[in-house]
Length: 238
Image 1: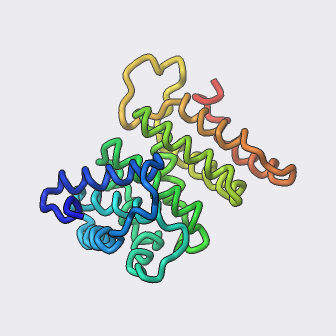
Image 2: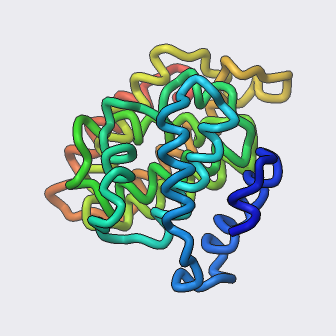
């Protein structure tokens, strides 16, 4: 708790990231976390300072910890749910915020999106499109750690009870992203890439992760129809 109360942002973020990594790796039991109140204060502060990226990063990490130890809505932290479940607020998912993040915080965006979709999909207020877009932005990242973490999340989404719905939503968003981005074909990937380009190899990895998951016979045609739009892109086709 002392680390969370530190006035140094660097110290606070380091503590938050350490706890989050421990929960993700299973080295600390979720029952160990008895400081939900302190975490809630950090999230609430970030929601009141949406133009300050360092404070938002603190809130993002704290939100991920709460979501990692909570699989059902806890009424004792109602203000937390008002912040993370309202998709229209885009407190942690705006393009402006995500565009300036490092790899650790981008991985936290993936965790946030994953937990909300897997555990609280029916509780979301407003369209969930933004969460799928966040995952895909990470999956097309030039950072290999971020890309692989996003692919891992897509696999979890595909294996969930809402797998078919998630597959279609991901393919829809992927189509939109590709229409607005410069796709580098495999033959051009040996050259230098930039933040405004997307590797065709990463696009293919996303498509394969979505389309090779087990689906019922009646769901396959719908998924394939959306996949065909993505696969028709020249960079991917080549």
